[in-house]
Length: 226
Image 1: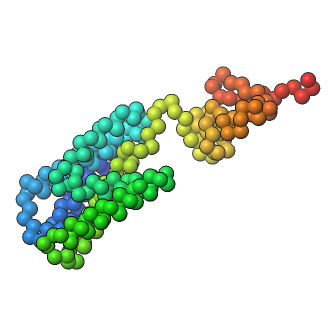
Image 2: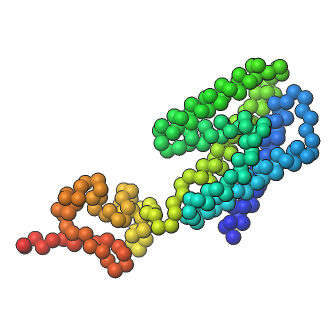
Image 3: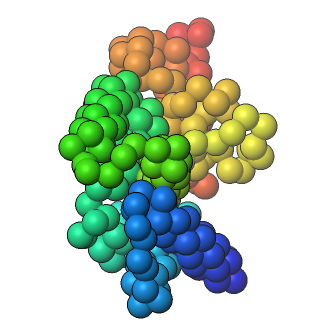
């Protein structure tokens, strides 16, 4: 049922984004002459892209193998032909949203280079630059932002089954063996004493690590009388 909801949302957003994209193509053309066949082709490409991105997003939530990312390959068809102008913008905006500083910096450079390229193409074009042209570029930037967001939702944050998961503070005790320590400090359950951070010798100085029958970890204090 959840998959159907994701597919419906992906299809709807894909068609809506395709219609908006067809609109900025109209704004950037001095004498637009669009056919129903061409419009249907553009809407079809965006619909397929929305569907495959929704499938990948659903598989990510189900914690399937990262190999399932290949389902987004049909979305690459968006960037063939005239759509190639969108590729640097989508890639750069997707990188800008990264949590890593150097990736964000790289994305910013890509976006700046893309905008410079679009400006250069506008200068060398025979068509005059008008308010309509500026509006077309603004709409194009919005389309690239939507596509970049969809790509990030579909391709990032995959955590296959069996990997350590974070546990929010206040989660029931029975679930904490599957994630981090109860304090929510980001340590996996396999390292409750933070041995990787403080050193094995320092960690063992406070006691011994044992394992319960249910797979959890317990600290056994040494006998102080010995």
